Amino acid sequence: MFSRWQLPVNLALYQIGWLACVLGAGAGRAWEGAGLALILLAAHLILVRDRGSELKLILAAAILGLVIDSLQLNAGVFRYPGGTPIAGLAPPWIVVLWMQFGTLLHFGLAWLSGRYLLAGLLGFVGGPLSFFAGERAGAIEFASLAAYAALAVAWAVAMPTLVWLGDRLQPIEAGYR
Picture 1 (cartoon, rainbow, N blue to C red):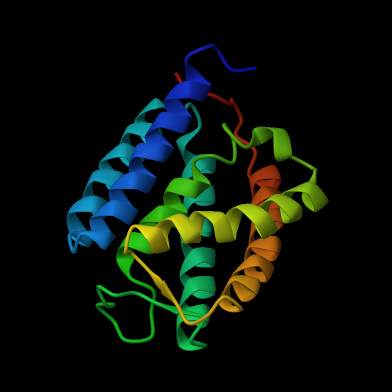
Picture 2: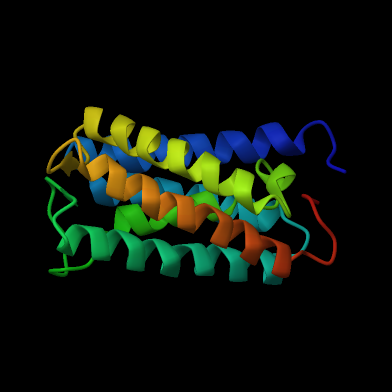
């Protein structure tokens, strides 16, 4: 069980990191936004009790996100107006965003543990909503409304996959120090 301050701190670190990445990318300052989000990610890792398990989960989220978003980028589902440093690969700020998301799995989204169907449904709805907010901020552009369907399917698979990984990489001692 978490103490009263752990969940709000985790959610705040994530939300500020999300805003930094998305608003930074939308304003043409993706590197600055990703840099701030990485500092917040480091703060999370300093606070967490079991860094090994947490770091594995965060890196797994980064790899999964890089693969999923690069595949969708190459399929023409969306594009990044600020471009990508390496053609065909999702930009670093979106990978940092996936890393930030990984920090929620043992904290803010811990209630999804073992609930893979619910995680899939949440991903199906929440993934596109998050990207819609990113589109409104100018960080991403979709090819069409139908592209949201591809995104929904991708997140319906990604979310339970990440929850499953989180279940397998359970920390020895959960929570913050």
